[in-house]
Image (cartoon, rainbow, N blue to C red):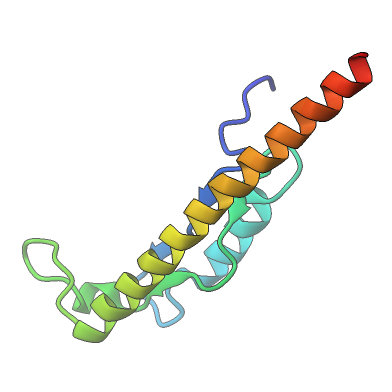
Length: 107
């Protein structure tokens, strides 16, 4: 109960499935877990990446073969990178403000 490795960490939910809905339902449940008290991850809200019928989208080397899937995954990752950078800056500002408030309270 002492460790909280996801607190304030940026998280992008991704998944793949052999079914039509991909991992969308599992990702909804995982989002709830990741943002729950005690976990407190900062889950990227813009869009999740879930792959339906994954068995048809990979070659024998495990590479994604579908150009539209590659394009969308690349977009998700670029958007998440911007989110993660902004998150890190926000967390740093929050930590600095908290440290300042604690210092003022200690006076």
